[in-house]
Image (cartoon, rainbow, N blue to C red; front, side):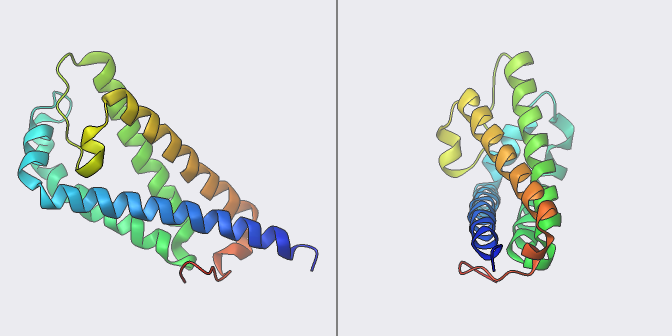
Length: 154
């Protein structure tokens, strides 16, 4: 039983990180869907995305919701953390590129994130990349936590 407090602590941390990421992805996907025309317009104005904007506006929200579902289910949580890490790194690289190379920055974020400056958004994403990586590392180090029932969901 010596491991039980540590398992509970790791489970709580994983539940908290999962919950934050689930909220983030569901919230941003919903914002993109509800304000589709603004999302499409902002992505179309991006020199990096341009003619791929329509594909991204249709494809990105379901991918974000899919990652949230993977994070929700204990048996797929590790895959969800990998997916979250990849998505957040892609978003972070995109933001960094835009900050470095684009003089006029169109905002394609939804909801509250629309009020962030690009620099604030970059820092926000870096924090969430870190949380995703922590989730991956904790689940890989403690594989029994795949099946550990948390009190938040499962």
